[in-house]
Image 1 (tube, helix red, strand yellow):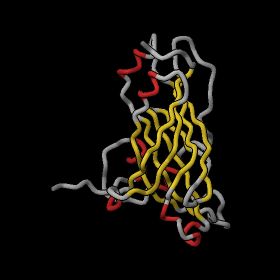
Image 2: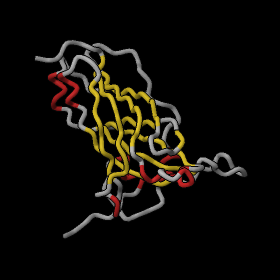
Image 3: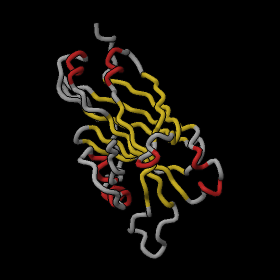
Length: 197
């Protein structure tokens, strides 16, 4: 049975074709924007998707504090052509991310019209060395991909408020059938309104 090789970092995040293993995580971390996507004024006939990355649980790679020492976890999120990265937080068994991102959705007359927009949210978690290079602070820290997940956001179309969900994050490559940890998130559509009929 054919099994695809591990994804390169840039391909895993952009959704491009999967290629052979490569040291791409640091390259992507350097290229991604430093700012978090923030809420913008809503244009007429447009909706925004809000995702709140709350906390992680059971990231057992860091059950030993010595394994977590000097490491940071950072989420990279893409939605169609929109891309953002979150603040890096210290690696831990139960990391707290507490980050909110906003993505603009295609023009639609109603929530029901958004059902045909099947593009998922792509969540990629990168682990990086927090120490960096003291001699060259502009050089990106060594980084590697920890996990990746495609999240269907459309269940929030039928809700009037935030929808909480729990995601079991799977590893990459040889670890793709192993749980890396659990992520608690909230999804919400802006502007808030009564559920679609």
